Image (cartoon, rainbow, N blue to C red; front, side, top):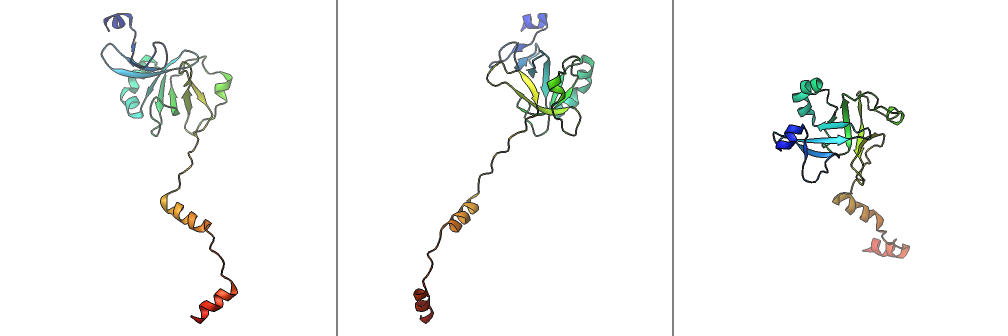
Length: 161
């Protein structure tokens, strides 16, 4: 850690390859998550409350930050709000990504197979098909069962009883 402090470099945590997206430890022992995009911009990925606490420092350092939507787990694909995007990193593909009504919010995900490069996309989260509950299973199976129709003679016999 002493060498990292002197060099001004964070050290990759277990499970992260140095220089790629993942968890990094600072010289003081604090752990941060960074996503690296195709422009080699290091985005610090944070939760909304962490952003609010450190907003002034992010502005002073001009740190590129992706703030996770409250329903997105930080460091996982989902909706993020961008702050401090470096100039020259907004290519034509990026300009066409659909954004939500809130400014600078878009769906971000990473390459799970390769080097975990983060990128914005206009893919929307696929909705999982809702699994039927127990009651709907019971009622649907009852509907599917066809009861044998009674013949006229059976109806007459029942009416005499």
